[in-house]
Image 1 (cartoon, chains in turn brown, yellow):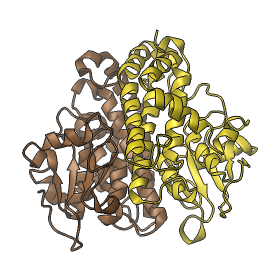
Image 2 (cartoon, chains in turn blue, green):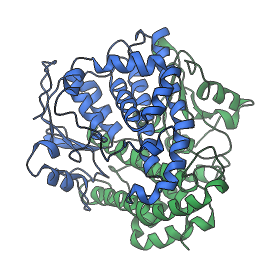
Image 3 (cartoon, one colour):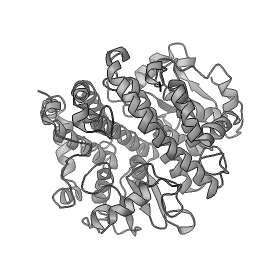
Image 4 (cartoon, chains in turn red, purple):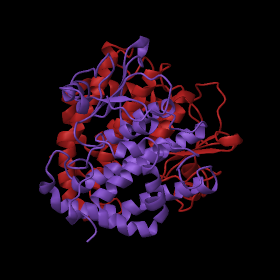
Length: 268
Length: 268
Protein backbone atom coordinates (compact mmCIF):
# COMPACT_ATOMS: atom_id res chain seq x y z
CA UNK A 1 0.00 0.00 0.00
CA UNK A 2 1.22 3.48 -0.85
CA UNK A 3 2.13 4.98 2.52
CA UNK A 4 2.47 8.72 2.21
CA UNK A 5 3.73 10.66 5.19
CA UNK A 6 0.88 10.60 7.67
CA UNK A 7 -0.81 13.93 8.31
CA UNK A 8 -4.40 13.19 9.28
CA UNK A 9 -5.66 11.17 12.19
CA UNK A 10 -9.13 10.72 10.72
CA UNK A 11 -10.24 7.17 9.91
CA UNK A 12 -10.50 6.46 6.21
CA UNK A 13 -11.71 3.49 4.23
CA UNK A 14 -9.06 1.59 2.30
CA UNK A 15 -9.32 3.57 -0.91
CA UNK A 16 -8.38 1.78 -4.14
CA UNK A 17 -7.20 3.67 -7.20
CA UNK A 18 -7.94 1.69 -10.35
CA UNK A 19 -5.76 2.84 -13.23
CA UNK A 20 -3.27 1.65 -15.84
CA UNK A 21 0.13 0.65 -14.42
CA UNK A 22 3.45 2.32 -15.10
CA UNK A 23 2.33 5.77 -16.25
CA UNK A 24 1.25 8.87 -14.32
CA UNK A 25 -1.69 9.58 -16.68
CA UNK A 26 -5.02 10.66 -15.29
CA UNK A 27 -4.40 8.54 -12.21
CA UNK A 28 -1.78 11.06 -11.16
CA UNK A 29 -4.39 13.67 -10.24
CA UNK A 30 -5.86 11.20 -7.77
CA UNK A 31 -2.46 10.12 -6.45
CA UNK A 32 -1.44 13.72 -5.79
CA UNK A 33 -4.61 14.31 -3.78
CA UNK A 34 -3.97 11.30 -1.54
CA UNK A 35 -0.29 12.13 -1.19
CA UNK A 36 -0.95 15.77 -0.31
CA UNK A 37 -3.48 14.66 2.28
CA UNK A 38 -1.25 11.97 3.70
CA UNK A 39 -4.05 9.42 3.39
CA UNK A 40 -3.12 5.84 2.39
CA UNK A 41 -4.49 4.35 -0.83
CA UNK A 42 -3.90 1.22 -2.83
CA UNK A 43 -2.65 1.84 -6.35
CA UNK A 44 -4.01 -1.50 -7.49
CA UNK A 45 -2.29 -1.99 -10.86
CA UNK A 46 1.09 -0.83 -9.53
CA UNK A 47 1.03 -2.56 -6.17
CA UNK A 48 -0.87 -5.79 -6.45
CA UNK A 49 0.14 -8.92 -8.27
CA UNK A 50 -2.30 -9.23 -11.16
CA UNK A 51 -3.66 -5.84 -10.11
CA UNK A 52 -4.10 -4.73 -13.70
CA UNK A 53 -6.40 -7.67 -14.19
CA UNK A 54 -8.64 -6.19 -11.54
CA UNK A 55 -8.52 -2.75 -13.19
CA UNK A 56 -9.46 -4.28 -16.52
CA UNK A 57 -12.22 -6.32 -14.98
CA UNK A 58 -13.76 -3.33 -13.20
CA UNK A 59 -13.10 -0.43 -15.60
CA UNK A 60 -12.65 -1.94 -19.03
CA UNK A 61 -15.22 -4.68 -19.25
CA UNK A 62 -18.13 -4.76 -21.71
CA UNK A 63 -20.83 -5.75 -19.26
CA UNK A 64 -23.51 -3.84 -17.40
CA UNK A 65 -21.61 -3.59 -14.14
CA UNK A 66 -18.22 -2.35 -12.97
CA UNK A 67 -18.02 -4.13 -9.60
CA UNK A 68 -19.99 -4.50 -6.37
CA UNK A 69 -23.26 -3.77 -8.21
CA UNK A 70 -22.12 -0.36 -9.41
CA UNK A 71 -22.87 0.64 -13.02
CA UNK A 72 -20.16 0.42 -15.72
CA UNK A 73 -17.17 2.74 -15.84
CA UNK A 74 -16.25 4.19 -19.25
CA UNK A 75 -12.50 3.94 -18.71
CA UNK A 76 -9.89 4.22 -15.94
CA UNK A 77 -9.31 5.89 -13.54
CA UNK A 78 -11.94 4.75 -11.08
CA UNK A 79 -11.99 4.85 -7.31
CA UNK A 80 -13.30 1.99 -5.22
CA UNK A 81 -14.43 2.91 -1.72
CA UNK A 82 -15.27 -0.02 0.58
CA UNK A 83 -18.47 0.76 2.43
CA UNK A 84 -19.08 3.91 0.37
CA UNK A 85 -22.03 2.60 -1.61
CA UNK A 86 -25.62 1.63 -0.92
CA UNK A 87 -26.26 -0.48 2.19
CA UNK A 88 -22.60 -0.66 3.09
CA UNK A 89 -21.41 -2.07 -0.23
CA UNK A 90 -18.42 -0.64 -2.07
CA UNK A 91 -18.83 2.48 -4.19
CA UNK A 92 -17.10 2.56 -7.58
CA UNK A 93 -16.95 5.95 -9.24
CA UNK A 94 -15.37 6.95 -12.54
CA UNK A 95 -14.25 10.19 -14.18
CA UNK A 96 -11.26 12.03 -12.72
CA UNK A 97 -13.04 15.26 -11.70
CA UNK A 98 -15.85 13.25 -10.15
CA UNK A 99 -13.35 11.31 -8.04
CA UNK A 100 -11.62 14.52 -6.98
CA UNK A 101 -14.91 16.12 -5.93
CA UNK A 102 -15.72 13.00 -3.90
CA UNK A 103 -12.34 13.10 -2.18
CA UNK A 104 -12.12 16.86 -1.76
CA UNK A 105 -13.90 17.24 1.56
CA UNK A 106 -12.81 13.81 2.81
CA UNK A 107 -9.14 14.59 2.24
CA UNK A 108 -9.47 18.18 3.48
CA UNK A 109 -8.43 19.52 0.09
CA UNK A 110 -11.24 22.03 -0.41
CA UNK A 111 -12.21 25.23 1.39
CA UNK A 112 -14.96 25.24 3.99
CA UNK A 113 -17.32 27.51 2.04
CA UNK A 114 -19.52 26.24 -0.78
CA UNK A 115 -18.40 28.90 -3.26
CA UNK A 116 -14.79 27.89 -2.72
CA UNK A 117 -15.59 24.24 -3.45
CA UNK A 118 -17.12 25.21 -6.79
CA UNK A 119 -14.10 27.41 -7.63
CA UNK A 120 -11.81 24.45 -6.95
CA UNK A 121 -13.84 22.22 -9.24
CA UNK A 122 -14.08 24.90 -11.94
CA UNK A 123 -10.29 25.30 -12.04
CA UNK A 124 -9.80 21.53 -11.93
CA UNK A 125 -12.15 20.87 -14.84
CA UNK A 126 -10.35 23.53 -16.85
CA UNK A 127 -6.92 22.09 -16.07
CA UNK A 128 -8.22 18.66 -17.15
CA UNK A 129 -9.40 20.23 -20.41
CA UNK A 130 -5.83 21.38 -21.04
CA UNK A 131 -4.66 17.89 -20.13
CA UNK A 132 -6.91 16.52 -22.91
CA UNK A 133 -5.66 19.08 -25.41
CA UNK A 134 -2.09 18.16 -24.58
CA UNK A 135 -2.92 14.52 -25.32
CA UNK A 136 -4.37 15.57 -28.64
CA UNK A 137 -1.13 17.31 -29.69
CA UNK A 138 0.31 13.87 -30.44
CA UNK A 139 -2.99 12.14 -31.21
CA UNK A 140 -5.14 14.66 -33.09
CA UNK A 141 -6.78 12.11 -35.38
CA UNK A 142 -7.17 8.77 -33.62
CA UNK A 143 -6.38 7.71 -30.07
CA UNK A 144 -5.76 4.10 -31.10
CA UNK A 145 -3.30 4.87 -33.91
CA UNK A 146 0.43 5.47 -33.53
CA UNK A 147 1.81 8.99 -33.32
CA UNK A 148 3.90 8.24 -36.36
CA UNK A 149 0.73 7.68 -38.36
CA UNK A 150 -0.62 11.13 -37.49
CA UNK A 151 2.60 13.09 -37.27
CA UNK A 152 1.79 15.65 -39.96
CA UNK A 153 -1.46 16.51 -38.24
CA UNK A 154 0.30 16.53 -34.86
CA UNK A 155 2.72 19.19 -36.06
CA UNK A 156 -0.20 21.45 -36.92
CA UNK A 157 -2.19 20.64 -33.80
CA UNK A 158 0.79 21.15 -31.49
CA UNK A 159 1.54 24.51 -33.07
CA UNK A 160 -2.00 25.69 -32.39
CA UNK A 161 -2.00 24.38 -28.83
CA UNK A 162 1.35 26.03 -28.11
CA UNK A 163 0.57 29.34 -29.75
CA UNK A 164 -3.07 29.80 -28.80
CA UNK A 165 -4.35 27.34 -26.24
CA UNK A 166 -1.51 27.14 -23.70
CA UNK A 167 -1.30 30.93 -23.23
CA UNK A 168 -5.09 31.13 -22.86
CA UNK A 169 -5.04 28.49 -20.12
CA UNK A 170 -1.98 29.92 -18.39
CA UNK A 171 -3.60 33.35 -18.36
CA UNK A 172 -6.71 31.88 -16.74
CA UNK A 173 -4.77 30.00 -14.06
CA UNK A 174 -2.65 33.05 -13.33
CA UNK A 175 -5.61 35.42 -13.15
CA UNK A 176 -7.30 33.00 -10.76
CA UNK A 177 -4.15 32.99 -8.64
CA UNK A 178 -4.08 36.80 -8.71
CA UNK A 179 -7.73 36.97 -7.73
CA UNK A 180 -7.01 34.91 -4.66
CA UNK A 181 -3.94 37.02 -3.94
CA UNK A 182 -5.84 40.30 -4.09
CA UNK A 183 -9.36 39.42 -2.99
CA UNK A 184 -8.98 36.10 -1.26
CA UNK A 185 -6.74 34.70 1.39
CA UNK A 186 -4.22 32.89 -0.81
CA UNK A 187 -1.45 35.51 -0.73
CA UNK A 188 -0.55 34.32 -4.23
CA UNK A 189 0.54 30.92 -3.01
CA UNK A 190 -2.68 29.01 -3.62
CA UNK A 191 -5.37 29.25 -6.27
CA UNK A 192 -8.31 29.14 -3.86
CA UNK A 193 -8.29 30.06 -0.16
CA UNK A 194 -5.39 29.94 2.24
CA UNK A 195 -4.43 26.27 2.09
CA UNK A 196 -3.70 23.61 -0.50
CA UNK A 197 -6.65 22.32 -2.54
CA UNK A 198 -6.88 19.77 -5.32
CA UNK A 199 -7.08 22.68 -7.76
CA UNK A 200 -3.45 23.45 -6.85
CA UNK A 201 -2.27 19.87 -7.25
CA UNK A 202 -4.21 19.38 -10.50
CA UNK A 203 -2.99 22.60 -12.12
CA UNK A 204 0.52 21.82 -10.90
CA UNK A 205 0.45 18.38 -12.51
CA UNK A 206 -0.71 19.77 -15.85
CA UNK A 207 1.95 22.50 -15.75
CA UNK A 208 4.57 19.90 -14.91
CA UNK A 209 3.43 17.72 -17.79
CA UNK A 210 3.49 20.67 -20.21
CA UNK A 211 7.06 21.45 -19.10
CA UNK A 212 8.03 17.86 -19.87
CA UNK A 213 6.31 17.80 -23.25
CA UNK A 214 7.21 21.31 -24.43
CA UNK A 215 10.26 22.47 -22.45
CA UNK A 216 11.18 25.25 -24.86
CA UNK A 217 7.65 26.55 -25.15
CA UNK A 218 7.15 26.58 -21.40
CA UNK A 219 10.53 28.21 -20.74
CA UNK A 220 9.50 31.03 -23.06
CA UNK A 221 6.09 31.31 -21.42
CA UNK A 222 7.72 31.62 -18.02
CA UNK A 223 8.72 35.15 -18.94
CA UNK A 224 5.05 36.01 -19.39
CA UNK A 225 3.87 34.12 -16.31
CA UNK A 226 6.78 34.24 -13.88
CA UNK A 227 4.71 33.82 -10.75
CA UNK A 228 2.53 30.95 -11.98
CA UNK A 229 5.36 29.00 -13.62
CA UNK A 230 7.94 30.08 -11.04
CA UNK A 231 6.78 30.80 -7.50
CA UNK A 232 3.48 28.90 -7.57
CA UNK A 233 4.89 25.89 -9.40
CA UNK A 234 7.89 25.64 -7.05
CA UNK A 235 5.86 26.22 -3.90
CA UNK A 236 3.46 23.37 -4.61
CA UNK A 237 6.44 21.02 -5.02
CA UNK A 238 7.47 21.90 -1.48
CA UNK A 239 4.07 21.20 0.09
CA UNK A 240 4.07 18.62 2.86
CA UNK A 241 3.20 15.25 1.35
CA UNK A 242 3.87 16.39 -2.20
CA UNK A 243 7.57 16.92 -1.56
CA UNK A 244 8.01 13.43 -0.10
CA UNK A 245 5.97 11.90 -2.89
CA UNK A 246 7.93 13.53 -5.69
CA UNK A 247 11.17 12.11 -4.36
CA UNK A 248 9.68 8.65 -3.78
CA UNK A 249 9.55 5.70 -6.14
CA UNK A 250 5.78 6.08 -6.27
CA UNK A 251 6.16 9.10 -8.55
CA UNK A 252 6.46 7.64 -12.05
CA UNK A 253 8.25 9.15 -15.03
CA UNK A 254 6.42 10.51 -18.03
CA UNK A 255 6.81 8.23 -21.00
CA UNK A 256 4.24 7.30 -23.62
CA UNK A 257 1.15 8.63 -21.88
CA UNK A 258 -0.66 11.96 -22.05
CA UNK A 259 2.51 14.03 -21.87
CA UNK A 260 5.17 13.01 -24.39
CA UNK A 261 8.34 14.77 -25.38
CA UNK A 262 8.59 14.84 -29.15
CA UNK A 263 11.11 17.64 -29.82
CA UNK A 264 9.61 18.34 -33.24
CA UNK A 265 6.30 19.33 -31.61
CA UNK A 266 7.92 21.84 -29.26
CA UNK A 267 8.72 25.47 -30.09
CA UNK A 268 11.57 25.50 -32.62
CA UNK B 1 -37.34 35.38 -18.80
CA UNK B 2 -37.63 31.83 -20.05
CA UNK B 3 -40.82 30.52 -18.47
CA UNK B 4 -40.93 26.77 -18.67
CA UNK B 5 -44.07 25.01 -17.58
CA UNK B 6 -44.12 25.35 -13.81
CA UNK B 7 -43.64 22.13 -11.90
CA UNK B 8 -42.03 23.04 -8.62
CA UNK B 9 -43.36 25.28 -5.90
CA UNK B 10 -39.98 25.75 -4.22
CA UNK B 11 -38.55 29.26 -4.12
CA UNK B 12 -35.53 29.73 -6.38
CA UNK B 13 -33.16 32.61 -6.93
CA UNK B 14 -33.34 34.28 -10.33
CA UNK B 15 -30.79 32.07 -12.06
CA UNK B 16 -28.90 33.61 -14.98
CA UNK B 17 -27.38 31.48 -17.72
CA UNK B 18 -24.45 33.26 -19.34
CA UNK B 19 -23.70 31.83 -22.77
CA UNK B 20 -23.29 32.76 -26.43
CA UNK B 21 -26.54 33.75 -28.19
CA UNK B 22 -28.22 31.94 -31.04
CA UNK B 23 -26.75 28.45 -30.67
CA UNK B 24 -27.61 25.52 -28.40
CA UNK B 25 -23.93 24.77 -27.63
CA UNK B 26 -22.87 23.87 -24.13
CA UNK B 27 -25.54 26.19 -22.76
CA UNK B 28 -28.12 23.66 -23.89
CA UNK B 29 -27.21 21.19 -21.14
CA UNK B 30 -28.07 23.88 -18.59
CA UNK B 31 -31.24 24.94 -20.40
CA UNK B 32 -32.52 21.36 -20.51
CA UNK B 33 -32.01 21.03 -16.75
CA UNK B 34 -34.04 24.15 -16.01
CA UNK B 35 -36.72 23.23 -18.52
CA UNK B 36 -37.08 19.68 -17.20
CA UNK B 37 -37.38 21.05 -13.67
CA UNK B 38 -39.82 23.78 -14.63
CA UNK B 39 -37.67 26.37 -12.89
CA UNK B 40 -37.40 29.85 -14.50
CA UNK B 41 -34.02 31.16 -15.62
CA UNK B 42 -32.76 34.12 -17.58
CA UNK B 43 -30.92 33.21 -20.78
CA UNK B 44 -29.06 36.50 -20.70
CA UNK B 45 -27.60 36.72 -24.22
CA UNK B 46 -30.82 35.53 -25.86
CA UNK B 47 -33.30 37.50 -23.79
CA UNK B 48 -31.74 40.77 -22.72
CA UNK B 49 -30.89 43.73 -24.90
CA UNK B 50 -27.11 43.90 -24.92
CA UNK B 51 -27.15 40.66 -22.97
CA UNK B 52 -24.18 39.30 -24.86
CA UNK B 53 -22.20 42.28 -23.64
CA UNK B 54 -22.83 41.04 -20.11
CA UNK B 55 -21.76 37.50 -21.02
CA UNK B 56 -18.56 38.83 -22.59
CA UNK B 57 -17.88 41.05 -19.61
CA UNK B 58 -18.34 38.23 -17.08
CA UNK B 59 -17.05 35.16 -18.93
CA UNK B 60 -14.68 36.40 -21.60
CA UNK B 61 -12.73 39.21 -19.95
CA UNK B 62 -8.99 39.23 -19.36
CA UNK B 63 -9.06 40.48 -15.77
CA UNK B 64 -8.79 38.78 -12.40
CA UNK B 65 -12.53 38.71 -11.72
CA UNK B 66 -15.65 37.43 -13.47
CA UNK B 67 -18.30 39.42 -11.58
CA UNK B 68 -19.47 40.07 -8.02
CA UNK B 69 -15.97 39.33 -6.65
CA UNK B 70 -15.90 35.81 -8.06
CA UNK B 71 -12.68 34.60 -9.75
CA UNK B 72 -12.39 34.53 -13.56
CA UNK B 73 -14.31 32.12 -15.76
CA UNK B 74 -12.36 30.42 -18.57
CA UNK B 75 -15.19 30.58 -21.09
CA UNK B 76 -18.99 30.39 -21.28
CA UNK B 77 -21.25 28.89 -20.06
CA UNK B 78 -21.39 30.28 -16.55
CA UNK B 79 -24.22 30.43 -14.07
CA UNK B 80 -24.88 33.48 -11.92
CA UNK B 81 -26.85 32.85 -8.74
CA UNK B 82 -27.96 35.95 -6.84
CA UNK B 83 -27.32 35.41 -3.14
CA UNK B 84 -25.46 32.16 -3.77
CA UNK B 85 -21.99 33.45 -2.91
CA UNK B 86 -20.17 34.55 0.20
CA UNK B 87 -22.03 36.88 2.55
CA UNK B 88 -25.09 37.01 0.32
CA UNK B 89 -23.29 38.14 -2.81
CA UNK B 90 -23.87 36.49 -6.16
CA UNK B 91 -22.10 33.25 -7.02
CA UNK B 92 -20.64 32.87 -10.51
CA UNK B 93 -19.59 29.36 -11.47
CA UNK B 94 -18.14 28.10 -14.72
CA UNK B 95 -17.73 24.71 -16.41
CA UNK B 96 -20.83 22.87 -17.62
CA UNK B 97 -20.55 19.78 -15.37
CA UNK B 98 -19.85 21.99 -12.37
CA UNK B 99 -23.01 23.99 -13.05
CA UNK B 100 -25.04 20.81 -13.47
CA UNK B 101 -23.77 19.39 -10.17
CA UNK B 102 -24.67 22.68 -8.46
CA UNK B 103 -28.19 22.59 -9.92
CA UNK B 104 -28.78 18.85 -9.54
CA UNK B 105 -30.16 18.78 -6.03
CA UNK B 106 -31.71 22.24 -6.28
CA UNK B 107 -33.68 21.29 -9.40
CA UNK B 108 -34.53 17.81 -8.09
CA UNK B 109 -32.66 16.21 -10.99
CA UNK B 110 -30.53 13.76 -8.99
CA UNK B 111 -31.37 10.74 -6.86
CA UNK B 112 -31.56 11.01 -3.08
CA UNK B 113 -28.62 8.69 -2.40
CA UNK B 114 -25.02 9.81 -2.63
CA UNK B 115 -23.93 6.95 -4.90
CA UNK B 116 -26.65 7.88 -7.37
CA UNK B 117 -25.46 11.49 -7.48
CA UNK B 118 -21.96 10.34 -8.42
CA UNK B 119 -23.34 7.99 -11.09
CA UNK B 120 -25.26 10.90 -12.59
CA UNK B 121 -22.13 13.05 -12.69
CA UNK B 122 -20.00 10.20 -14.06
CA UNK B 123 -22.39 9.67 -16.97
CA UNK B 124 -22.67 13.41 -17.55
CA UNK B 125 -18.92 13.95 -17.68
CA UNK B 126 -18.62 11.09 -20.16
CA UNK B 127 -21.40 12.49 -22.37
CA UNK B 128 -19.64 15.85 -22.32
CA UNK B 129 -16.44 14.12 -23.41
CA UNK B 130 -18.30 12.80 -26.46
CA UNK B 131 -19.64 16.31 -26.99
CA UNK B 132 -16.03 17.56 -27.17
CA UNK B 133 -15.01 14.79 -29.55
CA UNK B 134 -17.94 15.66 -31.81
CA UNK B 135 -16.73 19.26 -31.90
CA UNK B 136 -13.28 18.03 -32.87
CA UNK B 137 -14.64 16.11 -35.88
CA UNK B 138 -14.90 19.45 -37.71
CA UNK B 139 -12.11 21.23 -35.82
CA UNK B 140 -9.37 18.65 -35.22
CA UNK B 141 -6.48 21.09 -35.62
CA UNK B 142 -7.46 24.57 -34.43
CA UNK B 143 -10.65 25.84 -32.80
CA UNK B 144 -10.14 29.34 -34.20
CA UNK B 145 -9.63 28.31 -37.83
CA UNK B 146 -12.34 27.61 -40.38
CA UNK B 147 -13.51 24.08 -41.05
CA UNK B 148 -12.53 24.56 -44.67
CA UNK B 149 -8.93 25.08 -43.56
CA UNK B 150 -8.84 21.72 -41.73
CA UNK B 151 -11.16 19.70 -43.91
CA UNK B 152 -8.68 16.98 -44.86
CA UNK B 153 -7.89 16.37 -41.21
CA UNK B 154 -11.61 16.50 -40.37
CA UNK B 155 -12.35 13.70 -42.80
CA UNK B 156 -9.86 11.47 -40.97
CA UNK B 157 -10.93 12.55 -37.50
CA UNK B 158 -14.64 12.12 -38.24
CA UNK B 159 -14.02 8.64 -39.61
CA UNK B 160 -12.28 7.60 -36.39
CA UNK B 161 -14.96 9.16 -34.18
CA UNK B 162 -17.73 7.47 -36.17
CA UNK B 163 -16.07 4.06 -36.39
CA UNK B 164 -14.45 3.79 -32.98
CA UNK B 165 -15.50 6.45 -30.52
CA UNK B 166 -19.27 6.73 -31.05
CA UNK B 167 -19.88 2.97 -30.66
CA UNK B 168 -17.71 2.94 -27.52
CA UNK B 169 -19.73 5.76 -25.97
CA UNK B 170 -23.09 4.34 -27.09
CA UNK B 171 -22.17 0.99 -25.59
CA UNK B 172 -21.34 2.68 -22.28
CA UNK B 173 -24.57 4.67 -22.16
CA UNK B 174 -26.60 1.62 -23.08
CA UNK B 175 -24.90 -0.64 -20.55
CA UNK B 176 -25.56 1.99 -17.89
CA UNK B 177 -29.21 2.03 -18.92
CA UNK B 178 -29.32 -1.76 -18.77
CA UNK B 179 -27.70 -1.76 -15.34
CA UNK B 180 -30.45 0.48 -14.05
CA UNK B 181 -33.04 -1.66 -15.77
CA UNK B 182 -31.79 -4.87 -14.19
CA UNK B 183 -30.33 -3.81 -10.87
CA UNK B 184 -31.78 -0.37 -10.26
CA UNK B 185 -35.21 1.14 -10.36
CA UNK B 186 -35.11 2.70 -13.82
CA UNK B 187 -37.03 -0.01 -15.69
CA UNK B 188 -34.95 0.91 -18.74
CA UNK B 189 -36.47 4.36 -19.01
CA UNK B 190 -33.84 6.31 -17.09
CA UNK B 191 -30.09 5.97 -16.73
CA UNK B 192 -30.02 6.34 -12.94
CA UNK B 193 -32.87 5.69 -10.51
CA UNK B 194 -36.59 5.90 -11.19
CA UNK B 195 -36.98 9.51 -12.27
CA UNK B 196 -35.41 11.95 -14.67
CA UNK B 197 -31.88 13.18 -13.84
CA UNK B 198 -29.54 15.54 -15.64
CA UNK B 199 -27.64 12.45 -16.85
CA UNK B 200 -30.70 11.64 -18.97
CA UNK B 201 -31.06 15.15 -20.38
CA UNK B 202 -27.31 15.47 -21.04
CA UNK B 203 -26.96 12.12 -22.79
CA UNK B 204 -30.16 12.86 -24.72
CA UNK B 205 -28.78 16.18 -25.95
CA UNK B 206 -25.52 14.60 -27.11
CA UNK B 207 -27.41 11.80 -28.89
CA UNK B 208 -29.67 14.38 -30.52
CA UNK B 209 -26.66 16.38 -31.66
CA UNK B 210 -24.96 13.27 -33.05
CA UNK B 211 -28.13 12.45 -35.00
CA UNK B 212 -28.07 15.95 -36.49
CA UNK B 213 -24.38 15.83 -37.37
CA UNK B 214 -24.17 12.22 -38.58
CA UNK B 215 -27.69 11.11 -39.53
CA UNK B 216 -26.55 8.13 -41.60
CA UNK B 217 -24.07 6.92 -39.00
CA UNK B 218 -26.61 7.17 -36.20
CA UNK B 219 -29.35 5.49 -38.24
CA UNK B 220 -27.01 2.54 -38.75
CA UNK B 221 -26.05 2.49 -35.09
CA UNK B 222 -29.71 2.36 -34.11
CA UNK B 223 -29.76 -1.25 -35.24
CA UNK B 224 -27.07 -2.01 -32.67
CA UNK B 225 -28.59 0.11 -29.91
CA UNK B 226 -32.34 0.06 -30.56
CA UNK B 227 -33.36 0.77 -26.99
CA UNK B 228 -30.93 3.61 -26.32
CA UNK B 229 -31.45 5.36 -29.65
CA UNK B 230 -35.12 4.38 -29.87
CA UNK B 231 -37.07 3.94 -26.67
CA UNK B 232 -34.83 5.94 -24.35
CA UNK B 233 -34.26 8.77 -26.80
CA UNK B 234 -37.97 9.09 -27.60
CA UNK B 235 -39.09 8.79 -23.97
CA UNK B 236 -36.90 11.66 -22.81
CA UNK B 237 -38.46 13.89 -25.50
CA UNK B 238 -41.84 13.21 -23.92
CA UNK B 239 -40.82 14.13 -20.38
CA UNK B 240 -42.82 16.90 -18.76
CA UNK B 241 -41.02 20.18 -19.32
CA UNK B 242 -38.78 18.78 -22.05
CA UNK B 243 -41.69 18.17 -24.41
CA UNK B 244 -42.97 21.74 -24.06
CA UNK B 245 -39.47 23.14 -24.41
CA UNK B 246 -38.65 21.25 -27.59
CA UNK B 247 -41.73 22.65 -29.30
CA UNK B 248 -41.08 26.19 -28.04
CA UNK B 249 -39.12 28.97 -29.67
CA UNK B 250 -36.58 28.71 -26.87
CA UNK B 251 -35.19 25.52 -28.40
CA UNK B 252 -32.67 26.72 -30.98
CA UNK B 253 -31.61 24.95 -34.16
CA UNK B 254 -28.18 23.45 -34.58
CA UNK B 255 -26.11 25.52 -36.97
CA UNK B 256 -22.41 26.35 -36.74
CA UNK B 257 -21.78 25.24 -33.18
CA UNK B 258 -20.59 21.96 -31.69
CA UNK B 259 -22.85 19.80 -33.85
CA UNK B 260 -22.61 20.55 -37.58
CA UNK B 261 -23.97 18.63 -40.49
CA UNK B 262 -21.27 18.30 -43.12
CA UNK B 263 -22.50 15.38 -45.27
CA UNK B 264 -18.93 14.49 -46.29
CA UNK B 265 -18.06 13.72 -42.64
CA UNK B 266 -20.98 11.31 -42.19
CA UNK B 267 -20.98 7.62 -43.07
CA UNK B 268 -20.89 7.32 -46.88
